[in-house]
Length: 215
Image 1 (tube, rainbow, N blue to C red):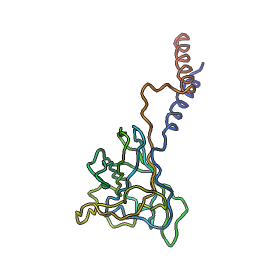
Image 2 (cartoon, rainbow, N blue to C red):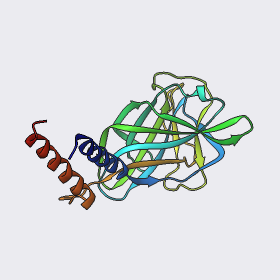
Image 3 (tube, rainbow, N blue to C red):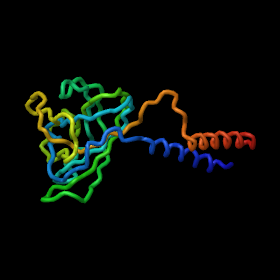
Protein backbone atom coordinates (compact mmCIF):
# COMPACT_ATOMS: atom_id res chain seq x y z
CA UNK A 1 0.00 0.00 0.00
CA UNK A 2 1.44 3.37 -1.02
CA UNK A 3 1.62 6.53 1.02
CA UNK A 4 -0.87 8.04 -1.45
CA UNK A 5 -3.47 5.42 -0.55
CA UNK A 6 -2.97 6.08 3.16
CA UNK A 7 -3.37 9.81 2.60
CA UNK A 8 -6.57 9.15 0.65
CA UNK A 9 -7.91 7.02 3.50
CA UNK A 10 -7.14 9.73 6.04
CA UNK A 11 -8.73 12.46 3.89
CA UNK A 12 -11.81 10.31 3.35
CA UNK A 13 -12.05 9.67 7.06
CA UNK A 14 -11.91 13.41 7.82
CA UNK A 15 -14.47 14.15 5.11
CA UNK A 16 -16.80 11.54 6.59
CA UNK A 17 -16.41 13.12 10.00
CA UNK A 18 -17.31 16.59 8.67
CA UNK A 19 -20.25 15.23 6.72
CA UNK A 20 -21.58 13.52 9.85
CA UNK A 21 -22.52 16.85 11.46
CA UNK A 22 -26.29 16.82 11.79
CA UNK A 23 -28.93 19.53 11.80
CA UNK A 24 -29.73 20.09 15.47
CA UNK A 25 -32.32 22.78 14.77
CA UNK A 26 -33.67 24.27 11.53
CA UNK A 27 -35.72 27.39 12.19
CA UNK A 28 -36.89 27.77 8.61
CA UNK A 29 -35.85 29.07 5.20
CA UNK A 30 -35.30 32.82 4.58
CA UNK A 31 -38.32 34.67 3.18
CA UNK A 32 -36.62 37.63 1.39
CA UNK A 33 -39.21 39.84 3.07
CA UNK A 34 -37.73 41.38 6.21
CA UNK A 35 -34.78 41.36 8.61
CA UNK A 36 -33.58 42.73 11.95
CA UNK A 37 -30.44 44.83 12.23
CA UNK A 38 -27.37 43.07 13.69
CA UNK A 39 -25.05 46.08 13.48
CA UNK A 40 -26.64 48.15 16.24
CA UNK A 41 -28.20 45.21 18.08
CA UNK A 42 -27.54 41.68 19.24
CA UNK A 43 -30.42 39.87 17.59
CA UNK A 44 -31.60 36.65 19.21
CA UNK A 45 -33.91 33.74 18.56
CA UNK A 46 -34.55 30.54 20.46
CA UNK A 47 -33.93 26.96 19.31
CA UNK A 48 -34.79 23.50 20.57
CA UNK A 49 -32.29 20.72 21.29
CA UNK A 50 -34.06 17.36 21.38
CA UNK A 51 -31.25 15.36 23.02
CA UNK A 52 -27.81 15.93 24.52
CA UNK A 53 -25.70 17.32 21.67
CA UNK A 54 -22.47 19.05 20.74
CA UNK A 55 -23.15 22.30 18.88
CA UNK A 56 -20.54 22.91 16.17
CA UNK A 57 -21.71 25.48 13.60
CA UNK A 58 -24.38 27.98 12.60
CA UNK A 59 -25.86 29.11 9.28
CA UNK A 60 -27.98 32.23 8.90
CA UNK A 61 -29.14 34.55 6.15
CA UNK A 62 -28.97 38.33 5.98
CA UNK A 63 -30.48 41.08 3.85
CA UNK A 64 -28.07 43.95 3.23
CA UNK A 65 -27.37 46.80 0.85
CA UNK A 66 -23.88 45.59 -0.10
CA UNK A 67 -21.45 42.74 0.60
CA UNK A 68 -19.22 45.22 2.42
CA UNK A 69 -21.84 45.76 5.12
CA UNK A 70 -20.48 42.58 6.70
CA UNK A 71 -17.64 43.76 8.97
CA UNK A 72 -15.57 40.58 8.63
CA UNK A 73 -16.59 38.64 11.73
CA UNK A 74 -19.61 37.68 13.83
CA UNK A 75 -19.86 37.89 17.60
CA UNK A 76 -22.06 34.98 18.69
CA UNK A 77 -23.74 33.99 21.95
CA UNK A 78 -25.52 30.91 23.24
CA UNK A 79 -27.91 31.73 26.08
CA UNK A 80 -29.90 29.62 28.48
CA UNK A 81 -33.66 30.11 28.34
CA UNK A 82 -35.17 32.20 31.11
CA UNK A 83 -38.96 32.02 31.00
CA UNK A 84 -39.15 32.68 27.27
CA UNK A 85 -36.26 35.16 27.07
CA UNK A 86 -32.46 34.86 26.79
CA UNK A 87 -30.96 34.04 30.18
CA UNK A 88 -27.33 33.59 31.19
CA UNK A 89 -24.64 33.24 28.51
CA UNK A 90 -23.25 29.70 28.45
CA UNK A 91 -20.85 30.27 25.54
CA UNK A 92 -19.74 33.11 23.26
CA UNK A 93 -17.08 33.93 20.73
CA UNK A 94 -16.07 35.77 17.60
CA UNK A 95 -15.99 33.90 14.29
CA UNK A 96 -15.07 34.67 10.71
CA UNK A 97 -18.10 33.66 8.67
CA UNK A 98 -18.09 32.60 5.04
CA UNK A 99 -20.24 34.93 2.94
CA UNK A 100 -22.13 33.67 -0.12
CA UNK A 101 -24.41 35.81 -2.27
CA UNK A 102 -27.56 33.80 -3.01
CA UNK A 103 -28.67 35.94 -5.96
CA UNK A 104 -31.98 36.60 -4.22
CA UNK A 105 -33.38 39.78 -2.73
CA UNK A 106 -34.89 42.85 -4.30
CA UNK A 107 -35.37 46.63 -4.18
CA UNK A 108 -31.64 47.18 -3.71
CA UNK A 109 -31.39 44.70 -0.81
CA UNK A 110 -29.43 41.53 -1.48
CA UNK A 111 -29.50 38.23 0.36
CA UNK A 112 -26.33 36.59 1.68
CA UNK A 113 -25.82 33.27 3.41
CA UNK A 114 -23.34 33.07 6.29
CA UNK A 115 -21.72 30.03 7.90
CA UNK A 116 -19.47 30.04 10.94
CA UNK A 117 -18.08 27.52 13.41
CA UNK A 118 -18.73 27.56 17.13
CA UNK A 119 -15.25 27.39 18.62
CA UNK A 120 -14.91 25.74 21.02
CA UNK A 121 -17.80 23.35 20.40
CA UNK A 122 -20.56 23.50 23.01
CA UNK A 123 -21.99 20.52 24.86
CA UNK A 124 -25.63 21.01 25.86
CA UNK A 125 -28.43 18.89 27.21
CA UNK A 126 -31.92 18.65 25.80
CA UNK A 127 -33.85 21.89 26.18
CA UNK A 128 -34.44 25.40 24.85
CA UNK A 129 -31.54 27.75 24.15
CA UNK A 130 -31.08 31.11 22.44
CA UNK A 131 -28.71 32.10 19.63
CA UNK A 132 -27.51 35.71 19.52
CA UNK A 133 -25.46 37.28 16.71
CA UNK A 134 -23.90 40.67 16.06
CA UNK A 135 -22.08 42.05 13.01
CA UNK A 136 -18.43 42.36 14.04
CA UNK A 137 -17.20 42.71 17.63
CA UNK A 138 -20.04 43.60 20.00
CA UNK A 139 -18.19 46.72 21.13
CA UNK A 140 -18.31 47.98 17.53
CA UNK A 141 -21.70 49.63 17.00
CA UNK A 142 -22.06 50.53 13.33
CA UNK A 143 -24.92 51.81 11.23
CA UNK A 144 -24.50 49.58 8.18
CA UNK A 145 -27.53 47.91 6.66
CA UNK A 146 -27.06 44.25 7.65
CA UNK A 147 -30.22 42.49 8.81
CA UNK A 148 -30.72 38.94 10.10
CA UNK A 149 -33.36 37.68 7.68
CA UNK A 150 -36.75 36.44 8.83
CA UNK A 151 -38.57 33.22 8.00
CA UNK A 152 -42.22 32.37 7.56
CA UNK A 153 -41.62 29.21 9.58
CA UNK A 154 -39.96 29.16 13.00
CA UNK A 155 -41.87 28.92 16.24
CA UNK A 156 -41.24 28.86 19.95
CA UNK A 157 -40.75 32.06 21.94
CA UNK A 158 -40.85 35.52 20.32
CA UNK A 159 -37.44 36.54 18.97
CA UNK A 160 -35.91 39.76 20.21
CA UNK A 161 -32.92 42.07 20.49
CA UNK A 162 -30.52 43.83 22.82
CA UNK A 163 -30.04 47.50 21.88
CA UNK A 164 -26.30 48.13 22.18
CA UNK A 165 -26.56 51.85 21.48
CA UNK A 166 -28.80 52.71 24.43
CA UNK A 167 -28.14 49.66 26.61
CA UNK A 168 -31.79 48.72 26.77
CA UNK A 169 -32.79 45.31 28.13
CA UNK A 170 -34.08 42.51 25.93
CA UNK A 171 -36.97 43.63 23.73
CA UNK A 172 -39.16 41.13 21.89
CA UNK A 173 -39.61 41.95 18.21
CA UNK A 174 -41.71 38.87 17.36
CA UNK A 175 -39.87 38.11 14.12
CA UNK A 176 -38.74 34.53 13.55
CA UNK A 177 -35.20 34.37 12.17
CA UNK A 178 -33.86 32.10 9.41
CA UNK A 179 -31.03 29.96 10.79
CA UNK A 180 -29.73 26.42 11.26
CA UNK A 181 -27.72 25.05 14.17
CA UNK A 182 -25.45 22.10 13.34
CA UNK A 183 -23.86 19.58 15.65
CA UNK A 184 -23.61 15.96 16.71
CA UNK A 185 -25.75 13.97 19.08
CA UNK A 186 -23.85 12.70 22.11
CA UNK A 187 -24.09 8.92 22.29
CA UNK A 188 -22.58 6.78 25.02
CA UNK A 189 -20.46 3.90 23.70
CA UNK A 190 -21.07 4.87 20.08
CA UNK A 191 -19.77 2.23 17.63
CA UNK A 192 -17.96 3.58 14.54
CA UNK A 193 -19.74 3.14 11.23
CA UNK A 194 -18.45 0.27 9.02
CA UNK A 195 -16.90 2.73 6.54
CA UNK A 196 -14.95 4.40 9.33
CA UNK A 197 -13.66 1.05 10.57
CA UNK A 198 -12.51 0.10 7.06
CA UNK A 199 -10.66 3.40 6.59
CA UNK A 200 -8.94 3.17 9.95
CA UNK A 201 -7.93 -0.43 9.26
CA UNK A 202 -6.60 0.47 5.83
CA UNK A 203 -4.56 3.30 7.26
CA UNK A 204 -3.06 1.18 10.03
CA UNK A 205 -2.29 -1.67 7.65
CA UNK A 206 -0.60 0.69 5.23
CA UNK A 207 1.53 2.24 7.95
CA UNK A 208 2.65 -1.23 9.07
CA UNK A 209 3.52 -2.21 5.50
CA UNK A 210 5.55 0.94 4.93
CA UNK A 211 7.49 0.33 8.12
CA UNK A 212 8.36 -3.22 7.01
CA UNK A 213 9.59 -1.83 3.68
CA UNK A 214 11.76 0.73 5.43
CA UNK A 215 9.87 3.91 4.43
